[in-house]
Image (cartoon, rainbow, N blue to C red; front, side):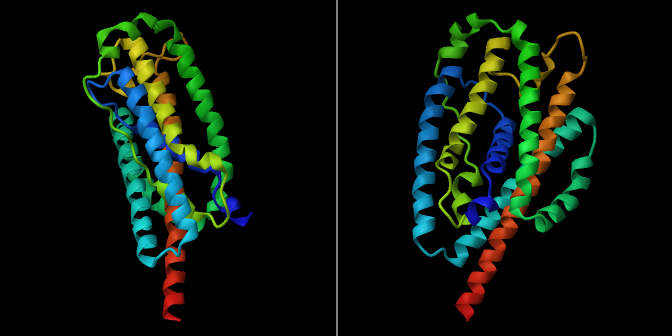
Length: 265
């Protein structure tokens, strides 16, 4: 059971959820297209993840694959950092994320994977709270008739299916058989994007709007900039994802170094 303690499902799920909410919806993609092709994409990625899980656990992992996995995780962390910096610059006119990067790299190197489970569980409560507040604020502006409009049902373009490193590389971080629910991480991404596209479609009548517009539509007469609070919750999750991916990359780097020592010995 030691492997399961190293990598928790809560941390993996929060990392994937954070990345999925940052994905921009492509213009011209209808909600119907998101549902149909999103299901097919999630099925395909689940199958690929299951096959790779069996391959990683039943065959000896070569050193070159471990180094490639490290690069993949660091690339995901860099992309999340750039997305977070873009939000900071556009919404808060701040460059704070660039200043946090050295600290996040240090935290990723110093904190083991088991240390990211407790923060993930706490952040999940903030995520649920933020989504509940967002839903309460836009519920009065939703028009179910928008789902029958041409922009919501026509299949003008195929949606992009996101691929994250967590789908493929988590078996390398687990020494024991993992819970089966880990295989359903692509469905978590699908659910996040469908909820986002559905909210935009119900409020605006189409998906050709930035995600921030859905947050700005929030209004119950309490806060004038509730979107700032929701963005801060996502930024906190983005900080978590960057540190978590750096910790995972550090774990794989240690495994690659051990493989190299074993081969040399």
